[in-house]
Amino acid sequence: MSLAMNLTRALLRARPNVFRTERTLREALRHLRPDAPLPASLRRTCTVGRRTVDGHEVITLTPKRGARGTEVIYLHGGAYVRPLVAAHWRIVAALIRRTGATVTVPFYGLAPRYTADDAYRFLDTVYRAVLDRAGDHPVFLAGDSCGAGLAVGQAIHCRDEGLRPPAGLILFSPWLDVTMTNPAIARLAPHDPMLAPEGLAAAGRAWAGPRPVTDPLISPLHDTLRDLPPMWIHQGGRDIFLPDAEAFTTKANATGTPTTLHVWPSAFHVFVGAGWTPEARRALDEAGERIRSGGRN
Image 1 (cartoon, one colour):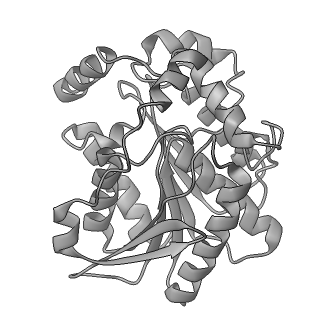
Image 2 (cartoon, one colour; image 1 turned 180 degrees about the vertical axis):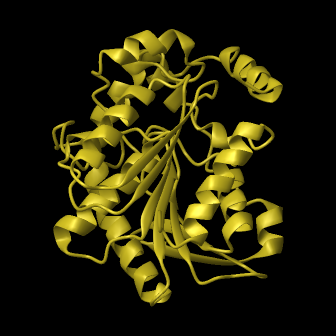
């Protein structure tokens, strides 16, 4: 465990945990800040495209130097109820530096105002447009936390609708089952400095809308996981999402979907946003190599 990781985790533990209960989550949602603005550093190094799809902003970042034609759709985390924050831009910037990929960031609608059904209609339009622009170049889905879960859901949607599949999925600390019913979660909860099951389960119910929370588009762990693209998961060992990531990896590989789980034992939820830690840098290096390789194992 690096000193930087240890100190960062201690700082996170000192902050209020908005997911501790359904009540604390509701209180936090009353005081949400807007999405973090696009950093000046990305405006300097990338050509920025902005458009509106179904009333939601979509930002596309193409590196001014070293662009390779590869496309990545990055879906941000926040338990489906919280906006994009500065750490998400740090992850996007890190992936662009390592890959030369064009990264599209769709600002999908958040619960409780919007549900998963709204998000998938929106993402379907975004995904088809990126496929058209990519031509023969690979298209990846990537994301963190709930955004990583949504990326898996979009891959499931592509499979079921007969769309061209992504070349692969890069998943940072994915939320794969919003029910939060895995019994191993309770054992990890005291060691997680960021998350708590009760508030997350409430957010998951709001996101599901009319769908059952076990619907595979809400909780991808409940899908068969057959015939999906290769997936690479980077998961912290101090994260209550770890037990579901382990179950997901076992299930996917058993069905023939190649899935690699890299567990960073001392790391917390979405640790890749803490780019000052060596663990985050190594995980991002590995993710970048997968994208540069075009999804080949």
